[in-house]
Image 1 (cartoon, helix red, strand yellow):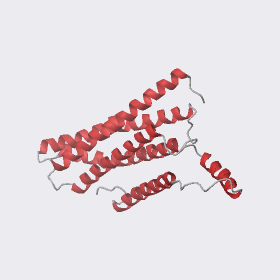
Image 2: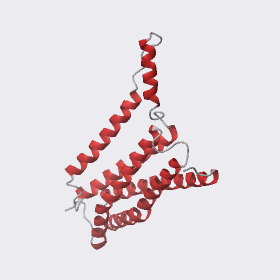
Image 3: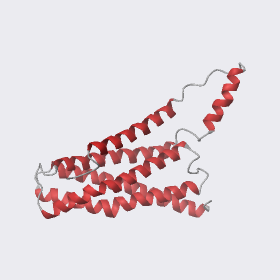
Image 4: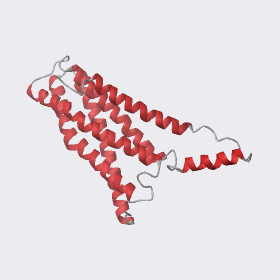
Length: 214
């Protein structure tokens, strides 16, 4: 599948728009989570959690899904490809993971918004859940900022190219025509980062009992 120049620009514009919208909405969500946790104004706390529920379902979720779809179409319809470059693949993993976790985390958001709509929340009511939402929003913001930086810097090169270079260089070293290549620390950091992210997500869900709010 190859996009025409006009369609490619349209999809790129749409992808940037939805991605920036997602990032901005998550930043607002984080501000609301901080307000709901720290404010002593009962009306403001209630309003913050009601706004979190509405913004989550009507802004953040649609923006995340649209950013994911337009990003995949953009990759498949351009020479970048979906599995040709490390930066595209890593960004895809981050986006898919963030979208799936977002859909999962909307359950406690909806529950908290429902509780806030029925009664005022004291400083101790559902405090663990409120802290969890704040941490989730902060983590989501970090992931989205990382995805944005990856889009700009496009690190790590082409998938498979480094392996071919290593093989060719190994043959040159064996023949005495070259010295060993430096350690690819960037790829090691990439793998370590993804592993740590996976361990964090799995451990967080095990500790929180599968996101249960009971």
